[in-house]
Image (tube, rainbow, N blue to C red):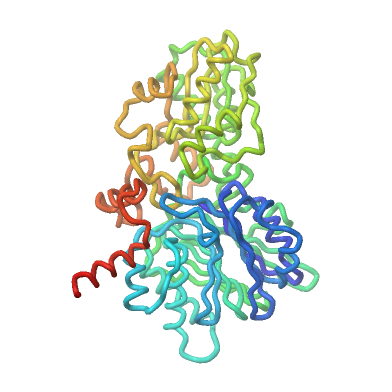
Length: 505
């Protein structure tokens, strides 16, 4: 999961891009990068770390121009923690292109081989985002028949990307001397919104992962980029769009509403905050229906994402709502930390329990989800250490039983707490007196109640149904092998080429 943004303005965009990345920092804390364009020249700075740590005054001064894109990176499984994989990525042919990507391609290995053997292009990292950039560059080169690039050429190239690339991708790119290009996969799995402002010199545009990046900076959210659509903002400030995919099916990621997105964001016409309130209402009904025998004294959320759900659950059940955990805001989100050991160590640094709210009480803790169970187990123990007589644990989402292959770090089944376990076994594993999960049908109903226009979601981590139709058992086993280190770290295309050379020699 990553955060992306592109801005066209009539004034320097370096500070605006920096501010937008700060607003999207929750989507990735591993690396950050900004590229601006002055005329046809790119100016780039990127590195590992949080936004505030990557950019210094001297870096910002070098980022000149009134057009730019930016990226915050969250590493998925198998990706290297190295500055080389920080985004945006750059290629110099044709025209010069930089690209930032949110999501994950599911046919990366096939594309790597095609690029090397057929397209005669070289990728320098194992990142699927660099592969995506080179596919776009090749398709753009094939589409251009004259010396001057046109919007039609770009749309033709994006159509080629849609034909070749599988998986989830929301993209912002910049073509030297031409402008910003943004596009979204034909299933619309990852979010992408468009904002507009009328400045003193004319139209200004922002395209970002979440609406909060636009609204907080004075832009009015116009709409979302549609599945399979490409949007161009030219260097004159003209916005042109076209649906480039032959077939589209709108299936946004359900986990975005559960966990990743900021509550003050509007994605695909849906308020994240209101969705989480509705999750709390449905969860309350399940508690009343199936767990009415539990004697609960107080409802306590796990900061921060679960607060709306916990608040509404407590209201519906007529129970006191209390803040029992104090959060250290200088510790990153444990779910998106790259290693299990780091996640576990950070939990007690991140949260501190207040004995006043736990002592001699039966507490219902509410969290957005239970993925690996590391955080849940530590938090439950903290509640007991603070004096709780009983600890029940409720999840605003269903059990996460399957890997997510579309850009969320859930690649191996043996890491998922709910995989192969009953609710009773899960409760015993994390030390809870009972575990209460949201039903998938209720989670879907909660989000659809806010926006009935969304007919279906990507809920693959809950139900194992992968909307792109290309995720097989063999693919999942290969992912697990890569994560466990059973395959070499060399990019797959190179491994395959080496094997071919060995055979032919």
